[in-house]
Length: 272
Length: 244
Image (cartoon, rainbow over all chains, first blue to last red; front, side, top):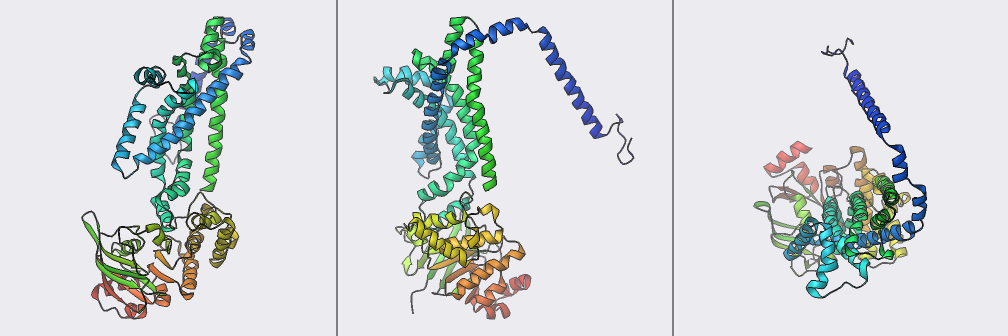
């Protein structure tokens, strides 16, 4: 026992105790992995999840149709959602009462209702209620429906970002003679977007996965995105391999996004 | 008598129930350097911020070069572009380079071309002794350098007068001198200046008038050397005995 520390019941110093408890954690982890490896049916796993012949049959349409459509649907919804989210955020911060109330209602509604129901409302509800079918087919419906859900979330994020920009920035811009809107566009919003970049990317990743809800609209072969493509192949081959392949395809989209954001954060940090 | 640069008449300002300014009458003549001193909470910063409408006066009138800026129909942005403002916290735009900090408002407000704006910006950077830093971001500059850039940014709009809101209070002591030096140069060139400050030495050396505020009123004003050496009012005496 060290002479400089008070005696402890266990007879170990804090550092020794931390090391011992970490050792126990590692042992448990290794034991779980070994147990899983022993009880797993490796033959079944290989034929049901990693069947090479099925994977090769998925190409090229898993990339040229499914992955492409997921990216297109997500991009449409994200761009629409970002623009609308920014507008809603500015309305929430407006000094004009009705702007604030309208924005609040829109945000609360589309944040609180499941995305699937929004899809159904735009795909089937609009034609029934108003006789309106959105022009541009599936793409427009996804853009608007998923975009509205995304906008509701992004509006609150962007609003918080705008409020996080120090008040002195607006004052400095105004004292140079810039109008309120010019100061917003040139000074406040660029800084707000740096602050909210990580949560916005998080939203983009969520939208990428939520774009799978488009299946409810009923998709022709050329409109299939990753999840509906995977489900169709699952039925066709009676094998789980397509879902594994589709999962990898989602990661191909989302992991680079995370990496790009980490880079941008590092760069913004340097400019601070 | 020519029109004063700044003329404040019976200015009152409330924040909620809290009355911060209690009937201020005050003016700054063209080419004058007026320093405003007083304990914190005396209303001196609020008075300064009212002059370019960063705070909206509750009642009273303010004239800038004869134009009433407290008129509700006044074109605020046009008035503000004639008044340069320097803040305690510098408030440089952190996402823009030094040069862009100086050219943004020139281009967007004054409608100057990119090259013309850059040329004027460089002239003013030279004036504050920071010509070499035009590509730096504000975060890479010391507080004193940032404040000098902020002064150069305000000067690039060719203001008729400059307002300084405790420009050296956020600086490390060894950096104060550079900023005061730039301000002294400006005063020597004849710039009209209103300076809220704790720098009594600056007030004595370059000030044409010293105003002492306490509790939302002007307690005493006059020649800086006189007021600092021989304050008439008891509250001025007690304040000066604490800071000098």
